[in-house]
Length: 75
Image 1 (cartoon, rainbow, N blue to C red):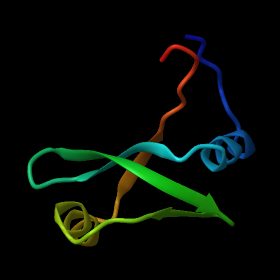
Image 2: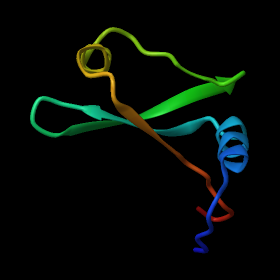
Image 3: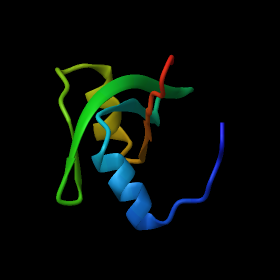
């Protein structure tokens, strides 16, 4: 695996070019991390979810983080 630094435009292009990742938000005692499918358009990230813990936690604590997945061949 090769690591490289990405500028803001590279990050946004990477985000726009993928649709799967993980959402991390603040839980009661521990971080809460769940797999997601998303869409990115015009500077906004869209994630669909039914009512539940993820929505409750995001409403209670706005800081969140998204990690994007990229799958190579044979992975």
